[in-house]
Length: 154
Image 1: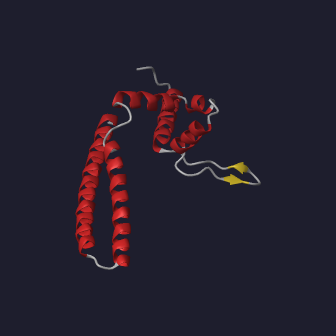
Image 2 (image 1 turned 90 degrees about the vertical axis):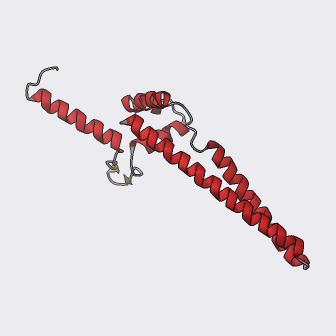
């Protein structure tokens, strides 16, 4: 299931890269048209306006090209990312204890689906957790019910 999700995400990234490439090509066509108009322009103000517009378009094109280089390329292999995710799910507190602010923010984003709310009178409110933690909670609840009913180890 995780590998299927990984592949779907990779395919989406590849499609996004293709759309970015098409956008970059369209920008280049617009730049070429503006350069042709620039050559025929007589007024200094028109020339300056064309030059500014071409500069902005070239900047946008460079940004698209930079994003295209990274699109569709995962930061690590599926196996590495899966292992990292399982370590996180097994013990997010261990990552929290490092004290690194960036890691703590990541733990909060990955564990809670909404910002944690705070009430002045009662303190922190119960936060809504993300799907993986919801599923783990359901699994633990079902396991506890199984054991309380006298279930045996499979």
